[in-house]
Image (cartoon, rainbow, N blue to C red):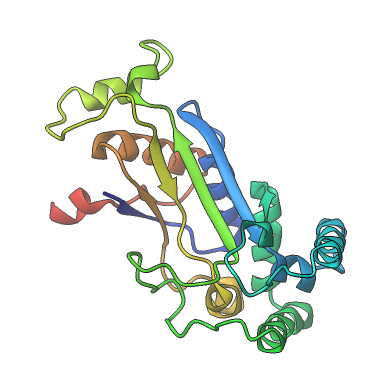
Length: 233
């Protein structure tokens, strides 16, 4: 079961620090971030995105049957945290360039008849993810039975009093919020999110909570993250 934690990250710089730190800690096994082709197309004037836009154009030229409106995994490419931060900066920064990019993204969706979600920014139903998601944030943490007694002593100590049923050999999966056209175009008016950033995690609550608190501290966020148990207190 996925549970959510909210992080005190509303400014672009705070979100950037959070995303980087989520991908750089001792409990991490792997990351898997993805960016949709429409984003690369809109940002093709930027050096970091131009090669990806060109590569996708070549892909469609070689595969005439590739439906750019589908869920074909080839429509998303692997990305780094810095790639994703570059997207958010390009769409959320103030100024005419950001406005033009948001308008171009809407135009591109209309041209290709891609569905434009109708939810409010960051308010989509987590049980029914909207389509298409334009940025995917996924992290995988080490299974409990792969934790080292010395290197990972913090989480192991936190787990000692857990009453939850654990599956020691299963990795811990974490994911960011859904980033659709709505979030890129309306998610951060004037470069500031209206609500705290939310990150989801499965696995034992104590494991995720310990890691998230460490990540928040490393990212130098003004307040620790808030999980469900904090709300119950």
